[in-house]
Amino acid sequence: MKRIMVILAALGMVGIFALAQMSKPEVRYAMLMGQGGIKGTAVILTLPSGEHEVFVRLEGLKPGSGNYANHIHYNDKGDANCQAQNGDKLVGLANLVADANGNAVAATKLPASVKYPSGTTYINVHSNSPQPVGASIACGMVEMK
Image (tube, rainbow, N blue to C red; front, side, top):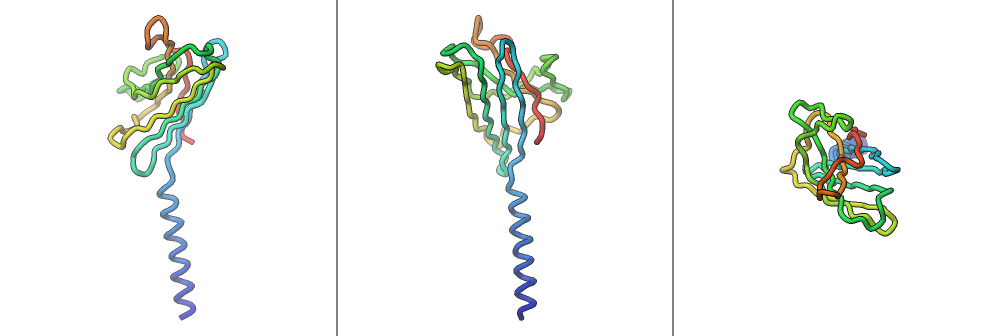
């Protein structure tokens, strides 16, 4: 009887370990680099439910300079690249808003219906002048952790 209890306990532990492994989010990240000392990070979590949580942090913006659009960029070929700026498709993220110190943080929750694009992707932060979504001011290739 004692032997059966030990075996059942061991199997239970293996089961718990397997469930814990299955419930870990998939993690992607990007180091954002830009003009004039702008830099930051992005972390993309794909949860077991299929939802995504995206966190973007940027520093070096002009203090109090407003909203900055940012996106996950990709393309049909699967070879999107910051340097080429060839990600003609995008997943919109919550705007970054520069604070009094020129720092900005944004968090976006995307539903499971939004599938993460295949191939290479990048995070692009856009200038807010002269258009609300202007040229790239910071970019980083997304990598798996």
